[in-house]
Image 1 (cartoon, rainbow, N blue to C red):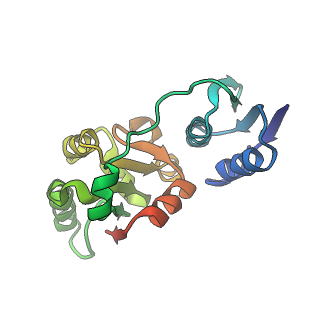
Image 2 (spheres, rainbow, N blue to C red):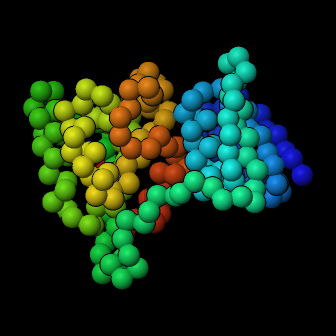
Length: 201
């Protein structure tokens, strides 16, 4: 059984939600999802891989086709941040960064405070579980960001970094992202549900 859905023109996270609905309701062996932007392609691809599909993509003009078929081994999923034993005694803290500055008033001071905050996050140790960048915060993940080295260090230590694909597209920064995984609101909301504590900056 093969299914195709057209998600062109749909804003995030609608392409992923429509794909999720199809997979859960009809459990197709093969499916194809048509999207019209790179963020949607990445989000749908990642979702299908998590569901056990082998995924391939192709371009036709301005359209991107994401094809998936079930029944074969897929690429590896992100490794769990903690063991079962450690999860029983440690909190899972999700930090959501919605700006590239802390507070309001002096922008230069706000940027210094944000750089200091992100550089200090590693002091949270293993309790830092997810680091999510949305809106203006996605600018901290691009090639010329002052905090790129520390974000890469956190990622190497097992912190899962999510970067809003809609936000990257809005600021025309999708190609400049250097750390983390391009994501969507479904992933972010799911992470919030699983977290023991959510900290908004």
